[in-house]
Image (cartoon, rainbow over all chains, first blue to last red; front, side, top):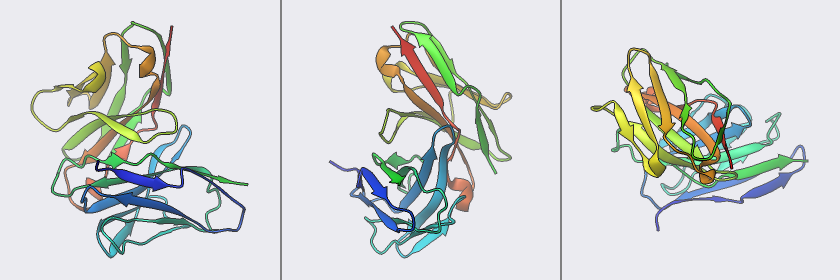
Length: 114
Length: 116
């Protein structure tokens, strides 16, 4: 079945460590997105990529980095520069030819900083 | 730029009662509108979307929403809720422009709690 796979589902990190969250999709979608979710804050866009080897900052990119070397993969690195990294992270994808903008989401990764 | 306001952060309701979750948006261009549902520790699933045409949109699980352009609203309704509808609901808007205007903007969510 086609879908988006995020791993790990739960991750614990010590302060000062970088961590990388994986996002893989087999939907043949061109565009991929990373959102951060905090209680009562909704979803806020971190980074997005419309095509391989290209990506743009979203509203809260500081302290995060991404790469898009393959169409299927869009990993997110939470760096030690991110002051408050504990959150639920959601990866999504969209086929640009589908001009409605509808997103398909993964199951999320919950990061906790100890 | 677009913005979305979900007027209620929490909505408690008894089983089999009707429910309305309110959503207002702001945009200088035409928009597409969406409602997503999120169960605990899961991703978001699309409930329904308004693109054009009929202002009453029907979605999955018996939900429907009505687009009101003059009031810039897109409220979600269900005539009779079940315990299984307990979840968080997100309204989202997308402007009909290129670049970052094409990104979805989400409201802060409404937690629906259905009590027996």
